[in-house]
Length: 112
Image 1: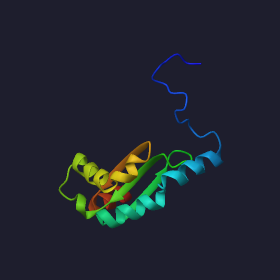
Image 2: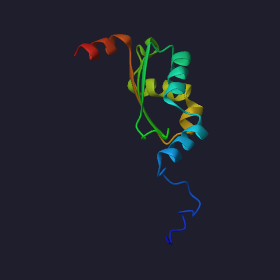
Image 3: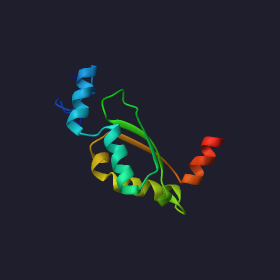
């Protein structure tokens, strides 16, 4: 048993089974589909690709987001826009990694 006072005995633990992972995803309500829908609605995103990097438990996501609203914005400003649009969702998950592109940047990336 740990003697570290900052570790609570009842602290949440990582899911050990697929069923536990699914239960966590169901309680947060955050899914790749819900994130995609929110980004398309709030940022008028033309393309959104969400990857659940957590093995299905819905706690760690990586996103590729294409929106004309990112025009003339630096990376930090783009991330702030995304984080603001997904404020509630991000609060419910463990990790979030957005990659933001304008439509022109996205076309160059796909071609290259």
